[in-house]
Image (tube, rainbow, N blue to C red; front, side):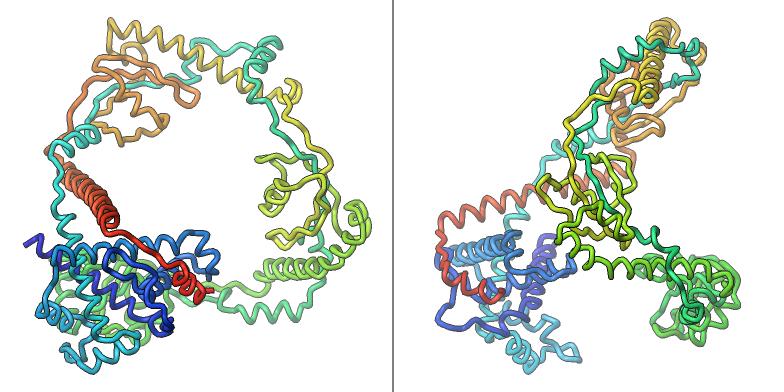
Length: 613
């Protein structure tokens, strides 16, 4: 039964895709003398079928990216080749089904057509006129559609036969479970800077110089571009902006809903089919027999699906008064709503808020002034561009406009205000000595023009320039070295007396830790290092300016009594079967194509692609 159910589901999915694909390219049939773009064995690759598949893929990609794509972009992404490959694979299966005599027969075809919802009337029965109309709108004849449906179903049976024949040996999942769910018990303690036997001494200049020389990579600046820029930001001229007080007040009045908000409620609403069901549900909640959350889950919903957010009383209509009379946490109803009888839960009470004009005008004034400053800068762009085109230097711009002259030694990651702008970073990265300055618009409404003065090769920073960084590095290394020495001495003592507490350590005991576990305050590879230990081993690991002393107490197998193990086993088995089935089917499809042979008509493909340009 499970196998039959799987096959029926697969067939329905394929039929659904076919029905969804009816609309579109068939309406504007390519026509002409061309009928196919090639063939696989004895099966032609229908020109319109390829065109429809390509159009569907393009529409899906555009919906996903929320942007319209040119066909040149589609080709650059390889979408046309991928779709052609999918159509070829489908026709190869159709060829194979024909070779082995696989067909669903007329009666099965009739039953499937009758069951397709797209061809049913309001009474739920097959509508002959609706069937003809739907196919006519799609540019398909009945014979063409039924032939496609036969092939789709036979293809699904063929795919199902390969997929359902896959079985994964239990030893495979056993091995994965044994690795993933293996457990470790261990005891560990941390030694930090406060645990040093004696304070760090003050380093001598020679020690700092030695540390600097031994870690030159940490004190080497990358290749750097010395850049001069002329910059104009809205902040630089906002003080010059004069605002009309009448316009400021008018803006407050227009946006009054932002500043004056009525009392609101955080509300969830769960609808029911009728009053009886809603009343019965409310009675169950009142008696304690169920909860609001349980009712939501039983309906196949999540709390996010019934959450109305924060709403004003007026937004709830007639039921608003009763909902707003409820206290936080109350469940009220059932009340009539636009989705039928419903229960309402109040999760929070938000008091009314009012920001007066006097309170709001400070932010409004700044917002409007910044907007005016951005517009003023935008109006200057053409003039500044013309000045640059006429030979003006950045120094000239600083003298004749509101732009400010500045310099920056730029490299990726430089801590400079101007480098916070992505437009500047992009322009600076591409800048060469031969580039002429031009206006670059910044994302805050400002503008900048830049010039490359010099490229500095990677260079070592002298100790005097990075003294604080050198000192911090020396102290970190010296601390780690001394803590390591103390930890190694303690490890020797633990071989005789394993009690960490007796040695003055604050021990932590961890049990049933799996490879996927994580312990706060330990490095990312800590658990991996623990799993590499043998029972009884004592090891010392570095960790964020401290060291960890770890003793492995036990190595345990997966806990088969844990219900999560059964779920994990099932998931791993399904994942492995799915992957193996895909690999087998890919090999099978490739073999079919090799045996059947593929021919393609490039002129026909070009004709299809021309319709997308």
